[in-house]
Amino acid sequence: MRKKNNVVAYFFLFPALIMFALFFIYPNLEVIYLSLFKWAGISPKKTFIGFYNFQVLFSDLDFLKAVFNTLMIAFQSMVVQVPMALILAILLNKKMKGNGTFSTIVFLPMVISLVAVGIIWRWLYDPEYGAINLILGKIGLQGLQHAWLGDVNTAFLSVLATINWVYIGFYTVIFMSALKGISPEIFEAAKVDGFNEFQTTLRIRIPMLKETIGVMFIMCISGSFKSFDLIWVMTGGGPVNSTEIVTTYLYRMAFRRMESGYASAISVTIFLICLVLIALQLKLMKITAQE
Amino acid sequence: MSICFNRKEKRQLNDYFLWKRKRNTFFHYSFLSFYAIIIIFPIFWVLVNSLKDNQEIFQNPWALPNIYRWSNYIKAWYEGNIGSAFFNSVIVTIISVVIVGLVASMAAYSLSRLQFAGKKTIFYLFLGGMYVAPVTSLIPLLKLLRNLNLVNTHWGLIFPYVAFALPLSIFIIRSYMLGIPKTVEEAAIVDGVAPFQLFWKIMFPLSLPSVYTVVILQIVYIWNEFLFALVFLRTSNKFTLPRALQVFQGSFITEFGPLNAAVLLAAIPTIIIYIIFSERIRNGMAIGFSSNE
Image (cartoon, rainbow over all chains, first blue to last red; front, side, top):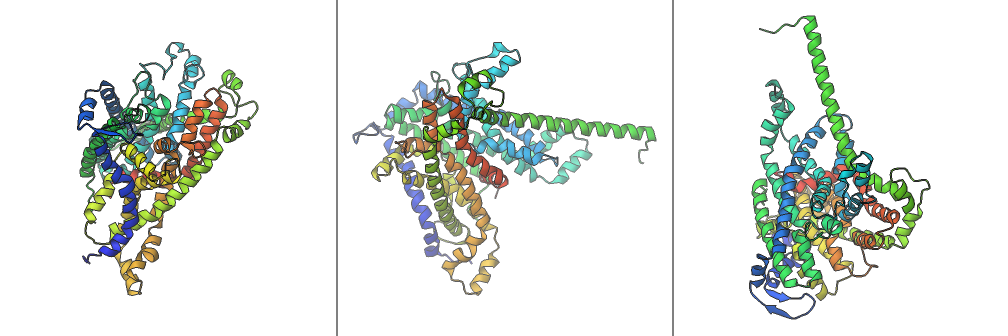
């Protein structure tokens, strides 16, 4: 059975490999090369400057601010989205009427275009006509009314709220399937021992889901380095640079300021971060090529 | 020794458990309902106000519309370029997912069933691709598309979409194929099916459930993709929906009715697909992340 079958195997792999090599691997390698140049993107003229772009990058305060914001999104996802998702998953995994519908609703934002989500929330946050300020006015909290996305102090928090609205459902679904993997006898035993829901969660569910939670934390980081649409539509990184993240900064550098060499250096940095995260994640998930 | 209760104690105990169950049920439904309202409300708000004119929105944002202004949808569709973008999105999405479905299942067949030199390397290459941020290849991709004369064409979107969809798709189909017993193929070989035909006649049809999952999942992802569309498309006649929406928002910023209509027109197809295939989509999106296969 261990007979090698190179011709047939590569025949079936060929279309995928060609597409993947040309439009995925090649660009990801070329970006390393491009990061060594001062290059405006459109012009054919490139000037070799070695690692100078990286030198500038790591002392670029705007970039460091963008990295900080990106990591804040990741951290916030870990401490807000993941616990919230765990609570929802525990409730949704119970055999209760209506849970099917609730599960459908919880995940719903994940299928809507993030551009559409951004536009919807921009309007909800609108200082004059947005639902949030209108509600605050109605319940007598006029004092809290606010230009949510226009104020440097609240813009980032407002964007975070929208990110939570979208992604909590995603983590919930992962928890739901992971929780189903725990054998019910363990919960029976916990019940006999007189554990309540809270104790069961703390002492049984969370320890049993350690690996899942680890993978999720990594996804929180890699996800924050991938996100772009929502922030670009809602704030464009502003006001000032209070909501700037790495990807919006990269886009601005590459296509607004025409610093493609510099933007490539940002790409390489993100790529390296992704590689480290992949390695960690694969280790946690124990995925191998063997069958 | 067993604990004995008299009738009164039994009743009290019963009441206690009943009360506890009621309390839990109450907490269960109030928590989930509250969360569901938070999710549904913004969508509902957009729906209601997509049928009003500005004046009515400002005066009475909470009420149902007095007159249902379907003209907002017509305005978004024709004047706001949403109609042509809708058509473009349909074309790009369908062509992309058909290619992904075929190409990914062929590759998954090799990776799950055949032994060959370099298998491990290729598997990890695809697997790693699942987690790399698309934004990192943006600049060289644009350069490449320029050299291939594909900037501002639909093929210039479709090829990168397929390439970036392959890792997850191959992973899902491969996992499914690993679960199909080998005896099925062995029986087919005995029946005289040639090795090259094993894929088309046996493995592809048998793994169709996972191919459907991949196709539906990628419909959702590709329909909503924004970054590549933002960079690779230049003229409004080529725009896909997210790109058109973003431009629409810039020019119709003061006309909330048509803007809401446009948002809904872009969102409704994936919402409908999700409602039909909710289980499949949820499991599909989670599959790349949750399990040890």
